[in-house]
Image (cartoon, rainbow over all chains, first blue to last red; front, side, top):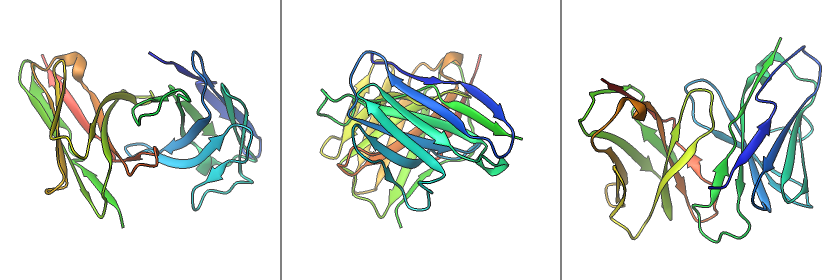
Length: 118
Length: 111
């Protein structure tokens, strides 16, 4: 099946630094990618929808200047957490929808990135 | 507001039995309902999708039912194995191809 990778899988950083997380679709093209955040024992919360070649669409309450999203190609989207603080510590997961797929079940999730801000 | 409810308590069952997980929703008219498996520290893995006009879907040992009148989906794993132990998430889509997830229910299958 289709594979989505994320890098890094874990990152620990100091408060105030910026962290970039990459999401790649390895064997398919993804016009649209999604970024989620998940706190322990909580559901996945959609942060933003990333569209190739255009600006991301952010969900209500998500600061676009804090979480910068760039979808530069059909296989790569990046999420940059700027000036990270301890409350940004979470599990960040991306998903990608196969551009060739017309049905709702062709969405694939990455393995997630655990961010810890000290 | 839209709400998806999954039992927050872990379901403990014995190997070989059938596990049944429940997903209830309110204030929602989903076009699709999906079930995912999530292992600790990993992203969700898609298992099954069922459409609003379908009553039941099967895939190997998995069975999903969808009752739009009761606003409920049941997820069954027959002949459960310890390897089935994981958190199972239900997700609803209203046709926008952006799913909304429940919190998930943890399943523990004891050998």
